[in-house]
Image (cartoon, one colour):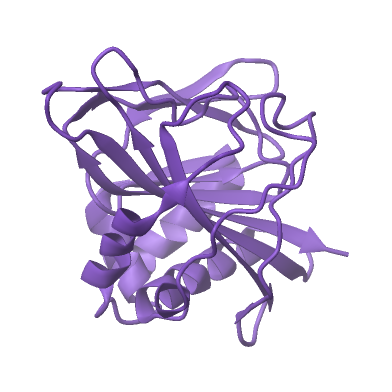
Length: 245
């Protein structure tokens, strides 16, 4: 997608997602679309909260390169989006052969961040887009994940250590928050047969990809530091939507 008026960009996003099962949205369009759902007055605080993520201690590969926080919300196709009590994140081994099969309790997303205008606008955008693409009405379980993948000299960071995968939900948003002193981190998408669908790198804040998780597998190549002596990391936001029956 290239720069378009906001209403046309939103319509194009939903059309591409419905037809192609994933859509890559550049930073300019995405920021404009998100702004149509609310103010981004706390964006600096929102993006800055990635500096306070806690280590992911559930990495079955023994890695200590991932930090994260987690929050769960609930919403209908219309009406308020409300945060639920903190709970575990769970994926079956069919979807995450590396870290699945256990309840994983991550530190919660800070209340001021989860309840702030930037987060509210992002959740509302996802709810609008996914509800328009999905058939029928739904009550959605929404999970928000803040990820930081750190890279060091001789120790690449793995954004998707489980490899090419689906998340076991209905829809997924992946948004770039910040890249600092890293190279690579290329996103790859395929269909269920392994047919290549797309390959691109999210580089700027707000660069995004939205996925129909039933149809599209995705993965990201490992990241390495450009300057080995300096901090190197990749910050992303992942929001998933799953129907509640």
